[in-house]
Image (cartoon, rainbow, N blue to C red; front, side, top):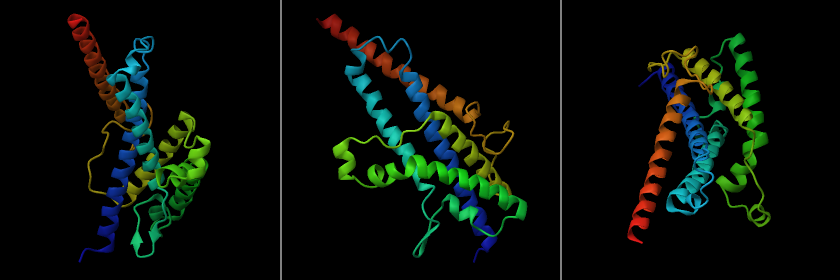
Length: 221
């Protein structure tokens, strides 16, 4: 039977991987949006009515809801009857932290949970997990917050993931070799740059397909 320490290390590794995935989701969603609103695309109103433009619009909505869901899942209860959840509370409430570490973790947890209560909880309960009738009738906009607030959340999450990774000595490669911390979720980090390159390339492909389709239609007319 594996020891408790081994189990906790494996849990910590999975938690850190999930935090990194959330950051990737956020980064890609932002990067695709920024690439899609480049000046050369905006003046062409016909583009947004084409299959290419509709694809980017639908992708934006799907990506936004999926990313919000990833935020929400981190704030589930650590345990639900017999089941345990891989969430922030699972690590922040454990007794393995040293006193100084616990105070720091507690402060990070307070900020993360406040962001969730203010910006994510309602959209989780009324849109992502359920189709709340009153919300749909009133066309209530939920889950909207300033980009800077999301970045602040991710900086805190990256710090927490780094502390979890370090505390349980996870046997995993550093995600970013040049980072000052193990999990660099800053806007200028390597992951953000990679997502931007991928998003711009993808939008370029969509735009190129749109242009070629237009050329074929003009040639055949």
